[in-house]
Length: 586
Image (cartoon, rainbow, N blue to C red):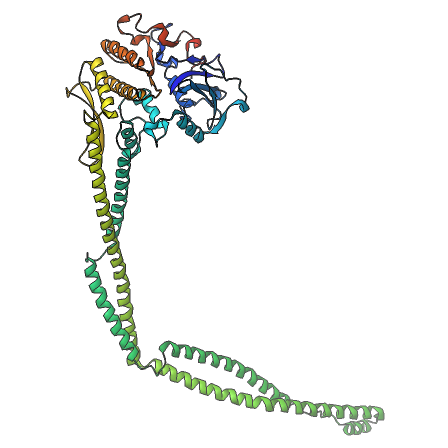
């Protein structure tokens, strides 16, 4: 992958940049004032724009002023194979969509292309998959090209460690297997080791938890099983004694239930008896009602004595009324007598049934309350319950111990497998670090040592070892132990490592670019000259290199330190026209 061209939809804000196949310089210089900070020219931002076009997630720091950037659409022209190009378009407002246009000639301009004229318009993740397939980095097969980009495009944040980038956060398993693959080692062994360690850690956590649940002094299954056996025998003995208790061929619970049933029957019969007795009382009171005491003959005598006439018609009507009332009374008495006759036997039967039920209830209650049998029953039942509870608890503890034993077994198997994997890692490292192995690592190591020798005049080498814990370690070492520990030399080591990597894979036919921001900052002047010579040398090997520097980085005022044909963009601070983005600084 080589960079061919980068441009934006607003050319008056961002002028297009065409890259050389070999060496490229983004040069920043001070014109208006030596006090101004030339780092704000935008030379470092270019790396972020390139990275954004190559599928980096939207950088909140770079695009924090959305009002200024929202309408920006960037275009990056990439040569992914010889004379095969693809232009990637990505807007700030739609970062989750990327567009692709294939072409065979360089330096195209697709700013006016309609959406339908793009060859592919894909969501973010699918866009990265497409770039993966186009770049076809077989030497990192199984990994995304995005993981390789960090070693190709280094910003100031990544000059602390040649091996571990700022994006390599978290556990070693997240980045060491990829770097191992990149250096020619067996990454699958490292992945297996990481997985085994994770599983062992999980088992250890389970083992600790299970151990905390065992509250007994017993630590073996044999101890627990012995106590369980004794308790089972005691429970069986208690149950046998319970079975031998004489409860009149009836279970205690059945007897208690029968007493409850008798109580219910007594209550119901008492209710019925109450209503029947009230009816009987009412009937008897009705039967005692007196007859009519009025006599028409006596009434006529009283009228005669008073000298009054008692009409015959009235006398006849009263006589008829008395006769009618006597007839009604007779009929009513007959009905009430019949009803009373029916009620009396019912009352008698219910009374007898109540006597019988109360006797039965007393008998049952008396039977249940026999002290010796009942007390023994309660005592045995309590013993059974206590032993059963203990049995359940011990069985749970036994299961916990069984689980603990199973975990120990699994840990032992995994530990054996881990030991085997770590031995394989050691063998793999040993085979690849041998000077006569002709491995990709030995080539990278040789190129790295050569770059350090040419720039620092010191002997240094890359070292890959397996530590006492079985973990792979990536290091650089100087033959002089105290040499070059400062930040500026760490930067040089990072650059040397990237160049060595890129050269090794360029020799395998891959198109590779390198972007190093602020490459000469803080270096000694002599080192700058030597490093520039090496960069030019490596560009002759087919490696595309892009660096940024400012005029203050030029050593000893050498006018032709950078050749004009190497400079692809000059930035200055005279006004906004000299900035990467020709707009008010943000």
